[in-house]
Image (cartoon, rainbow, N blue to C red; front, side, top):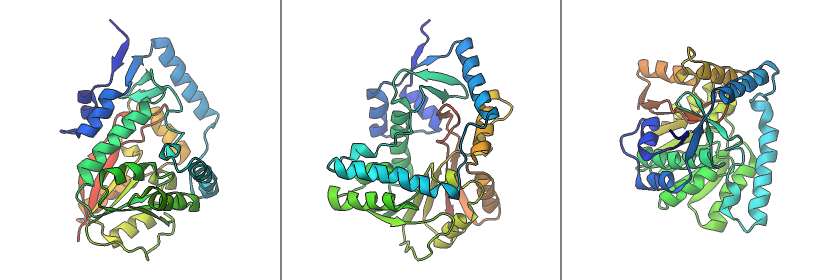
Length: 310
């Protein structure tokens, strides 16, 4: 029996807990090389040992407000490349995706045969999320927009909407504004700090908020942002983030992901807080989904869809 498998549309649908996958997402799944190889027992042992040793040696950096300068520098590099290469949108693809050929799939490790496996999975998943949850809103805000990579896809899907890219890095704001002025996309940028939300931000009726691996950077300091959302009352909020509550710590692969998540200081307690708000009838959780796919160290693609109650 071959040790090589291909991620199918059916498997993708199952991982996302979906019933229908848009044709655009299906096209990505079917047209890209999404083959993967099961690890041998020795390869799996070496993978686990390497992760445990890195955790023991405290190899990983920790996220938080102190990294604002790092992100400013990172997005400035993207801004310079974008400007110098005639505003080529491909220069905005995040380079930290697909950093390792070994990825997580269904609570185990596999080896991707194409370096762009994780990127293409995310591309397909993003189309699904945008079409399944954001299609009916006139104003769409991405908080923590970074290089603006998500804004491109969103603007191409919904050219008649107003789309806003918000980030604490000025370079990210400039990228979003250049998308509008140089590429004609319905996008504009604005500076925004999760730790000190700008209540002067106007949020019209029929607006949606979303984040994609952005809230992860604020650890357990999400309350200011959460209160901002509750005050602004968007019609919908979509958070695609690593959600620690969804790991099954009785399983080794999940336990190591949880330990990595905790050491990095990623988003902590957020889903539990949303569940408490829902129990108190302050919000409604429309959908919560663990996505059993991720990079070598953890799952970053789980999501929760919710809305404040008016």
